[in-house]
Image (cartoon, rainbow, N blue to C red):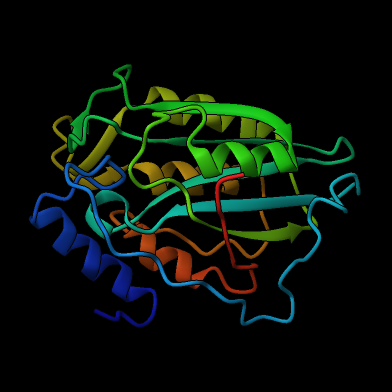
Length: 224
């Protein structure tokens, strides 16, 4: 199914919510289809991120499990600490697969800090959580950013880890909305002030959103 344009994000997401897809949850059954190898279509795709990690400029990455959440996709995030050669990275994994977990509940939120190579290694093996995923992160997209705000991004990490998980109707407000892995990834990278960050509408589908990260690099991520 191909959905063109940003309006398609909401359409597919609504379908996912109706059929009960707990966006970003760990799927119950093993999927056997392999993700196709992504290629970069932009001349601005970054190369040699590890070699330039010490440059005093910002950068951000999105990590993708294309087969996660019943193939609607799952995403995590990473951002560079300029001038240090280190990155902060993490995700909201939602291991229960429930559509709603109240604030303060276990949503499988985690974050870590390390070198660029360590980030790729740990994301490629699900080293932090849950560690035994049937669908590890197998693709990642990155971009340089002339603007960044590490303190705001760190504050947002604390916010997304404490606010619970939701795909559907919020029992507190009656509003159809989401607070899932994509919302966490987008909110953290937006707080970081990432350049060229495509807006993520409420109830957007991760696999659709990652295709609209215009100008970001696009690479396979294999266990390392």
